[in-house]
Amino acid sequence: MYMDLTTNISTTKPSTPLEKARFRKRQLLAQDHILRQLTRLVQLEVLNMARPAGWCQTKTLDLRMRERDGQLEKLSVLKSLYYINFHDANQELSKSEINWMFDNWPRLSFVMGQLHPRADTRQELEALVHERKALKKRKGGV
Image (cartoon, rainbow, N blue to C red; front, side, top):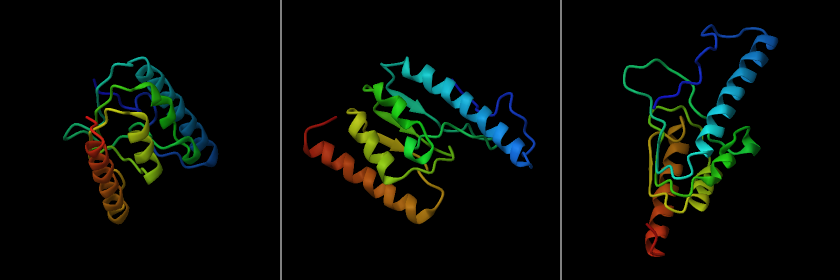
C-alpha cells in the first residue's frame, strides 16, 4: 500500500503566510488520518515508508516526536513492528526518536534508510541504531 500525503493538496508552492498555514494544516490533517489508520493495525510488523523508484518528491509521514512538531507517539501501539524503512522518505529524526522507537517497539530489529538529510547527523543516528540493536541482542531480544 502506498500513501502519498500530497494527494488532493496543491502542488504549487504556497507563497503567502496564509497559503503556507492552510497548506500545513491540510498536511497535518492528512498525516493525522493516516496515523489513526496505522494505529488500528496493532499487529503491523513491517512499515515501509520508502518512496518507489521514479516517483516524484513527496512528503511522507513525519515521525518526529510531539516536542518537535511530529506525532510519533501515536504509534506506540505497534508493539509487533520489527522493520521500518525510511529510504528516500524525507525524515529528519533525532536521537530521541530513535531511542523512542527502540523503547516502544520491543521487536524492532531493522531500521533502514536515510534517517536525516545531514550526513553528520545521519551517521550519528545510524551508530545509535547499531548500538541499540547490539544492546537488544545482548539482552536476548529479537
